[in-house]
Structure formats: structure tokens, C-alpha cells
Image (cartoon, rainbow, N blue to C red):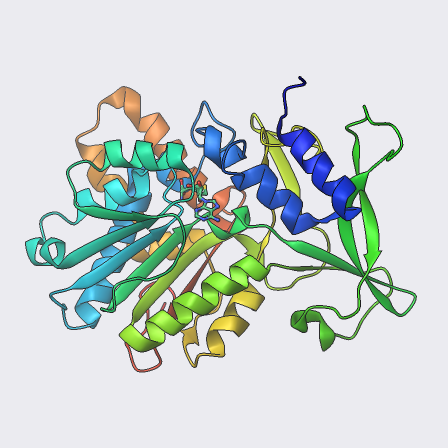
Length: 364
Ligand code: SAH
């Protein structure tokens, strides 16, 4: 019998349904319970497909730790405080947050930590890295404890499946993933196709449509933002989202990365990282529906500078061996320089209307 793999599974689904939505394709590629990219790989780090800010320097997590302590203080130091991280990857960010804040015992004692991680392999790694802490793991965002909460998400939402739509000849069409040749049973070549739809998603129905314009929508991001907005509204607290993205839903932003290089998103299913640019405008709209304050987008470089990354850089340099300083400096630059991650990555905060402005995001 022929061994079934992810490509075959996707192909079968395409044949059965005469093409599948891009979001269904991405979901199977990224989080299929057996063959998905995140399910079976350790994708993050120098040996993986991509490197994230917490992996570049400990300064990133340390400053976010301070940001969280400030939110805790601004909520009158509650004795039970929920700290939630979405998509914690290798566990580095949470480890740095907890290490940087350990000399505030009252804060540590208050923490109820939840990590939301879909990948069993990464959960296992996180359990090892964070073995000294009491932590609750979940594979999706739901049922958080009803206490003041801070939710953080670094490079989480770019990993979410998206749908794409195009407006052609006064009609909405959905861009789907299909097979190049349905007749040839041995062909595994996928292609994009178009499917007529009765009604576009709500996000698109009010738009001034332009011929041949592609629009992106992520129902899964919407679901998560609505959950966390309701939760923050009810329990107070804040949310910090850091990602690469923009303030609209225009154009196709789907990309595929394998071994630090761009690749074809319709090849190497489960082996390459599929992402898209996060639409911060949509996140803002979803959360504002719950009467929350959503900050404007702030560049990662500006955010980290306001939190004191330069001072932290100097403090760490003082005890550093000479040979390590060059790497330390290049890590700083990578995080904050405009032509590196400093501008490409954006930060957005969400909070209750009656709580204090968020440091680094609201008062400069
Ligand atoms: N925040 C980390 C990792 C970013 S990669 C860092 O900055 O290094 C994205 C992370 O989100 C991974 O841990 C991945 O397994 C997780 N993830 C992706 N899709 C998810 C989903 N739908 N639900 C929960 N976790 C998910």
C-alpha cells in the first residue's frame, strides 16, 4: 500500500471538495495533528526555518517582563494575576520574562501562567525550559481564569490561516487551492483557482470594491481576538501583540519560508513555514467592538527604545567578555534598527477603557 502523506491528504480533500479554501490548506500544512509543520518540527532558531526576537536577545523578554509588571501595578497589584502567552515557541520569551521579574516576589506569587500552544513537540520543549514554574498548557485560547489578565503574542497571528477573495467583473470570488490536473491521478501539482461565492465575509461587504483587487480575511484571528476582547472586558487587563503586518487587508501577503529562504507555498506541504502579514486594522476593529482601547501601531524599535533597551544593553555589556560584545551589539541592532526588525515589526496594545495608558504604546 502506498504510504499516505500530507500532500496526499490535501490532494484527497481537494478532489472530494473540488478545491479547498486557502485557510483549509494552510491549516492542514501548519497544524495538521500528525503531519503539520508545527506538529512535527522545531522550526524556530538558527537551525530552524526562522528566528524570532526572543531568540535574538534576552533583552527582548526582559523588557516585555517589565511591561507586564507595569500592567500588574496599574491594576493595583492583584494577588491573582493571569499571564497568558499565545504561541510560546521555544519557551524563551516566557523564561526571560520570569527570570527578569523574579526579584519582585509579590508579582511572581500572583501569577497564574497559561501557555497556549498547539504543537505537542513545542509543548514538550516548553515544559523542559520552564520546568521550575507552575504552568497550565492549552492547545487553544479558551476558558482562561476569570481574574485580571495580560496576554502576550509575539509572531503568533502571522501563523494563522487566511482566506483570500478577489473582486472580478462585479462579483466576489474566493481564491482556492486546487489541482493542476484532476485527471492525472499521479500528479501532485497544486495551483490556485477561483470559486464563486454567494456572499463575501462581513469584513468585505462594505468595501468600495476595485476590479482585480485581492483582499485577505482571517476568521481564526477574528475568533481569537473576540475571545480575548470579551475576556479583557470582563476581567480587566491588557494584551500585547507583536508581529509583522500592516493596517489593511489589501493584496496577497501569503509567503512561504524554508531554511531561511522564500519557497513556493504550494510545494513542500508541512515542511515550510506559511505566514501572512497580520492585518492590525482588523484586530483593532474586532476589539473596539467590545469598547476596548486599541493603541495605534508602534514600531518595535520605538517600543523597545521607550522601554529602555539601550540602558539594558549597556548594563549587560558591563559584565560581558570582549568577544561577546560584537554579537550583543548586532542583536540590539537587529531588534531595533529601521532596516532590520525595528520597523517591519509592529506592536499594538489592547486594554480596558478605564485602565491606565499602556507604557511604550500610548505615552511616548
Ligand atoms: N512566540 C514565539 C514563537 C512564534 S512561532 C517566538 O516569538 O519565538 C508561532 C508559535 O505559535 C509556535 O509556538 C506555534 O506552534 C504556535 N501556533 C501556531 N498556530 C497555533 C494555533 N492555531 N494555536 C496555538 N498555537 C499555535
